[in-house]
Amino acid sequence: DTGVSQDPRHKITKRGQNVTFRCDPISEHNRLYWYRQTLGQGPEFLTYFQNEAQLEKSRLLSDRFSAERPKGSFSTLEIQRTEQGDSAMYLCASSLAPGSYEQYFGPGTRLTVT
Amino acid sequence: DAKTTQPPSMDCAEGRAANLPCNHSTISGNEYVYWYRQIHSQGPQYIIHGLKNNETNEMASLIITEDRKSSTLILPHATLRDTAVYYCIVREGRNAGNMLTFGGGTRLMVKP
Image (cartoon, rainbow over all chains, first blue to last red; front, side):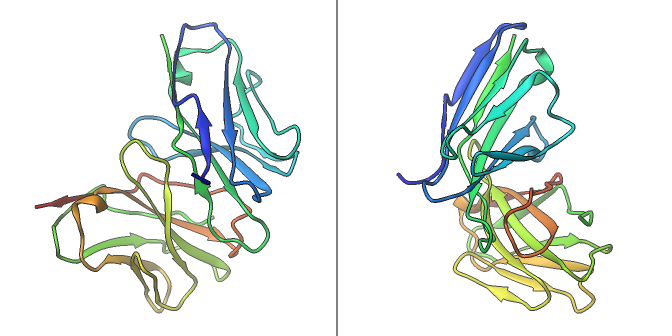
């Protein structure tokens, strides 16, 4: 399967713990995006990378959130000191820019904070 | 990016055409209309996009009104696998480089 992959698919953690998610984009894609989706809502943009550079961050991305894409390939999203409000689906997408009009999404990581 | 308005839910009989409307009355001249869908427990999937002309691909057709203030996504022969949330998104430029702003979407239920 050459699509976008995310790991883990599900994560249950206790409030206050740190969690890290991984996203592997389609191999030749230079842009990588993170979105968050809460139940019943559409996905909300968090941040995106062009190769290894983080070009934009949403105000939703508080100081407890950090994302990296160290070699311009896979990316990690870390949440420190998790809160119950962080419970959501975290979606990763990738695209080839410029020129491509489609973002390809992974299956997401569902985080539950207890 | 311009705001979009979609009905929260719709039903469609299997084998019939599903027509999903979207209002984007504040769309500007360089903004494209994109449609994505999200099947339960999956990430969103691109369907189609257009600027002002009608577009068709293997998945669907997109009809944009002449004033560009609204559009309709048409699934010509809906199947049970088309049950999903459909998002209409308006975004500047044709490039996929920028973020997508999703609204609430339309939950389409295809019934046997």
